[in-house]
Each structure stands twice: as structure tokens, then as C-alpha cells.
Image 1 (tube, helix red, strand yellow):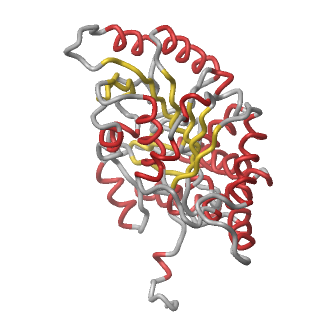
Image 2 (image 1 turned 60 degrees about the vertical axis):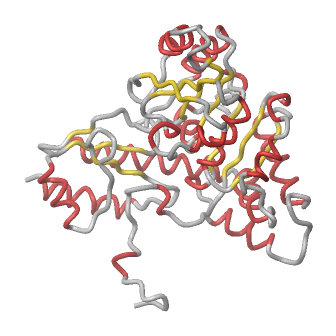
Length: 351
């Protein structure tokens, strides 16, 4: 037993969520360095400047950068900045803003309605945008104002650059802003081999919420506005929502560590490779199948309830909240030996 009385079996690596992972070395080292001495509070510090400039260098543009604690706040406040209470936000039926944010987007916008389209492989289509944007034009229905997409999607797929251009064109045809929920944006970049700029503002994205927590940080997401006009008073929104960190350097320093070292991409590349490795090992097991394309760091495994329960009884944790399939997530520190142990247990349980 350790000093906290946590049993060793509760410390072994699991694949239920990339949120289970700890802090990567680059983020940890930057936080340790930021912890030396005193600096000004509320973002008036060199670490926040350094992180913001690192984002601008990475995205090849003079974007506005805001740091918040988590993804729900990032998405909700960004959407609230793009819409009024009487507006509608077009999203897919598997979007995180629809399924997992407890009404926060509606709350922070004082009532903007989510207009939901059926997703194919987790993706919103240009056709769905056209349909929902033109569905009703009367004053009795929320006026569409924003499109939001998740990159990579909740089902582990990735929007290509061509798909993003098409979605942007559909959005702009109706005068709609385009927001990207990028909690796993780094994994999309790693999969496609394209730059962050190519997958955002060069493809017509107006606002990105860049996820740090799932990329190796303890906490923190960045909201990037590629159109300065859309960022008006966003700092006030953050303050009012309890998202202005007094010791902002501890949100900013890990970003500097990730971006300047390139760890943000290496972490995502490793996570993606581990997901692909796992999927290939599982694919040949009888009575078990992979049910969604493996583009990023997510793998959905379909098996009977009996098989999945046997896997759980062997100590493995996973979720089945999307379509009943077992979701396995691979983080920046995924260990191949541990993956092999999981595959072995799945094979035994499927017999």
C-alpha cells in the first residue's frame, strides 16, 4: 500500500478514457519552472505571453488566445460569444455539446437552442447544415447562427481538410460562424499529417477550442479566435463564468511546454499508433469486431454483453455509452505491454 492507501490494482494503466493519464514530462517540467518565485496574477505574467505566442507561431496567424480550465467551459463560452439567446447552434447528434455538457452551451448563451442533425461516423455533413439552416425562416423558430463540429469526433473519426472546406462553405452560405470543439484536435493533426493552420482557419474555422487535458496536461483548454471581432469581451465572459485563473501561469506554462517542445504532436502520434495497434490485434478475435473507423486514439469494440462483462471482471474499465460498443481510449503514455495484456484478456473472454 502507498502513502495514500491506494491499492496497486487501482494504479495500473486503463483505457476507458485518456483523462485517466497523468501529466506528460514536458508539461510537468514547465509547471515546475513556473513555480519558482513570484509573478503577476490573472494572466499578466510572462508564461501567459509565452503560451499565447507559441499558439500564434503554431497556427501561423495572429489569433486571440484565452485559457480556461476545461472543455465544457471552452465550448460553452465560445458558442455563447458567437450567438444570442434567440439563436440556434447546428451540431451532430453525437457532438459533445449535445450529449455530455449538461446544457452548459444553452446556459451560458442564455438559451441558444442546439439544432441537432443525425451524424454518420460522428460527422456533421454539409447537407445537414443546409437542411437545418433552411428548415424554418419564421420568427417563431430559433435563428441559426453557428455550426459546431468535433475534431476528432466522439466516435473517433477525423474530418479531412476537404470535408472541413465543404462544411465551412455550407456554413458561410447561410451566414453561420464555424466553431470547432478540438478536445482531441492534436490527434486529428497527427492522423492527417496536416498543420494546425490547415485544419482550422485555412479551412474556414472561426473559433477553435484546443484540448490540453487529453494531450498530456493536468487541466486546461485554449480558446483561439481567428477573427478578432468575434473575441470582443470574451475575457469578461471568462471572468463571469469563473474561468479566469488567478495563478494563470499554471494554466499557461504547460501549454508552453507542450507547444515549444513539439510534445503536443508526439503525444497525439503515440496515442494514435497505440489505438491502431490495439485495433489490429483485436480484429482477428472471433465474436469481437471493430465498429468504427480508427482515425485517432479511439477504438470501439463490439461484443456480446457476456463477453464484455467477463472483460470487466478481469479488472478492465471501459465505457459503453455510445451505441453499446465498448470504447477504449489511448493516451500519450499508453504502454504496448499493457495493451497486449488487454488484448489477451479479450481473446480469452471471447472463447
